Image (cartoon, rainbow, N blue to C red):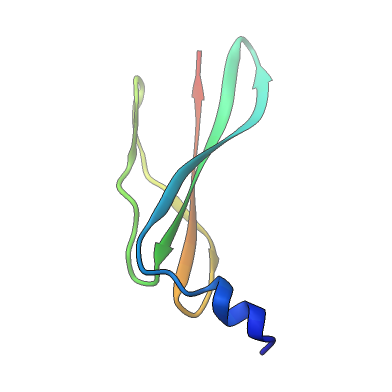
Length: 74
């Protein structure tokens, strides 16, 4: 394994949420919230006016998992 991969997956504390604008449609902003969590940990659901959005795993590494929650805001 290249040395930079082991450095990239070293994580001791959660990172996020990092918000991204996916697109705008039908008068709403469609966003993604990304979280980088230590392996075995999961982020809390994202609370919106329409309810709780459970993040889904997006990518897994030896010691970290990247999670994404997608939602829309008016």
